[in-house]
Structure formats: C-alpha cells, structure tokens
Length: 159
Image 1 (cartoon, rainbow, N blue to C red):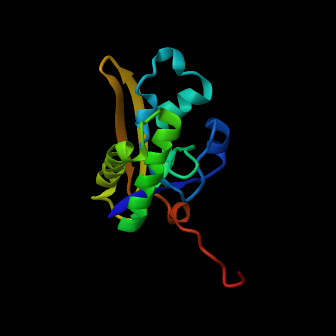
Image 2 (cartoon, rainbow, N blue to C red):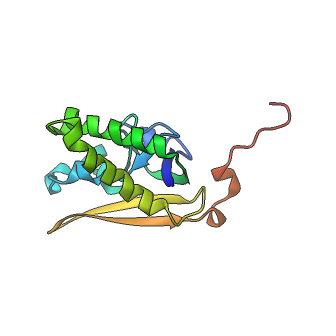
C-alpha cells in the first residue's frame, strides 16, 4: 500500500499556511475542510490552504508537496483512527465509531491516488470552487522530472 508524506523544498509553506504540516507526516487531500466554503472564505492564508494545501494527519496543518511512499496496513489503520478522532473533536461527528468509515474513505482515496506511482513521485493539488462544490485536480511530478537532490538527502562521508 502507498500513501504520501509531506515534503518541503524550502521554508515557503511556513509563511503561506496558517498551520504548516511537519515534514514527513502522512497526508491526505483534506478537501472536506472546504465543503461549506464560499468565495468570501478565500482570503489570505486560508485561500492558500484551499488552493493547494494537502492536509497533514499529525498536525492537521497544510503542505504544498507530498511524496509517494509505502505505508504499512497497521499505520494506515492508526491514521484512520486519528482522523476519526479529529472528525469528532473539530467537525462534530457523533462518535469515533461513526466517523471511522469516513476517515477510512479519506485515507483510501489518498492511497488510490498514490497506488500507481513510484516512490518519491511528487503530487500537488489544485482546488477551485464550482457551482457543484469543491473541485480537486492533481499534478504528478515523477522522480525523473525532479532533480535527485530535491528528493533525497545525501550525507557526506564526514557526517
């Protein structure tokens, strides 16, 4: 199974999102956060989170880029549990049990997005408001299109 982790190439996410995701945390689209939004909600940092932010599943902050990688089933189940708890605490779900199927669905959606991509493939999301709701489009940047230094951290023999 595959999922995606937050990745940063510079400090820009620290400046453009109210709450940036931590490098390396598991991420999902998180578009559900914007389901009741209208044009009036799209200002400043909130607009940036809406336009292109993935949702981190530890900090519930946002990040611009995610990288595809393997995830263990037990980890995926823990993430669903944490997300269900988040739904109860912040979105008024009646119970963790009631929210668990929705949380699993969100994680399965992200896993499906990652399934056909090689490790280190980068993904971006672009959202727009349409008359029928929030529309998400995804961009794939394969490892061959990115410089190796942008994807891997290399240690020198001295370190």
